[in-house]
Amino acid sequence: MSEEVEWWEYEDAGEMAAAVAGDIAFVIESAIDARGTAVIALAGGRTPIPIYAKLASTKLDWKRVTIIPGDERIVPLGDPLSNVTALAKNFLPKGARVVPIVPTAIADYKAAGRSADALMQDLHWPLDLCLLGVGADGHAASIFPGPDFDEAINGPKERRALGVMPDPMPLDAPVPRVSLSLAAITAARALLIAIRGNEKRSVMEKAIRQGTSSPYPIGRALAGTELPVDIHWAP
Ligand code: 6PG
Image 1 (cartoon, rainbow, N blue to C red):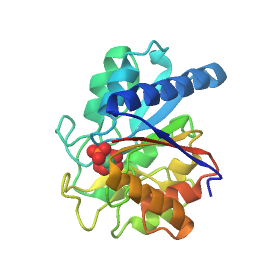
Image 2: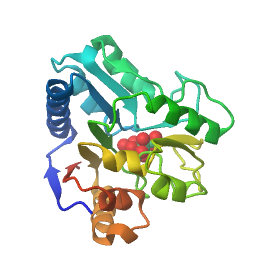
Image 3: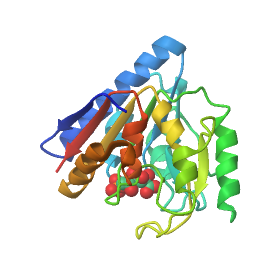
């Protein structure tokens, strides 16, 4: 169980973007100093977009940075729904290594998950940082209720990624997914959450109260990590 969850509140999304980008940059620099490389997983969705723009403008040794999406929709590369698109747009021009975890949109979502897991087995591990967004339903990464929920939460510790068929399908991206496993998320050296709005704030507060019995994936992530977790919130 995370011993401490620290809330960081901001006046607006711009202030949060500057602060979270600064925190991520610090983790990247520390990882490069310590191990010569940084491997980070960044969230999909809309909330982190200003964070990535701010982070991309930061002077870092980007050629030593590997970035993966913490989860991905199983769609062709370049599809507007693909999470890696925003990461490639912001960080490839800086010289970072942006690794798509779903290089081809295959029909068999479990096979896509196994392929992403195999790809991640070649990365420096554990992750130096995992930035998570949270859905209004309490999902994090692409750990959603459905037939793969238990495997995502309680699967083998060495499993880094898996295929997920959300049920019910999320309205804004009704496609199968590949997600970091909970084990991969909670093993990260730094875990940051960035959310906006009161609805998600109350989901987070409830998830923290519920702990290990939380029905929310984000609640299980918080309960599963020994790390202090920073929750960044803006209206
Ligand atoms: C996804 C995202 C997901 C996201 C939340 C919040 O693929 O759907 O990675 O986990 O972080 O859904 O999304 P917003 O920031 O757009 O609300």
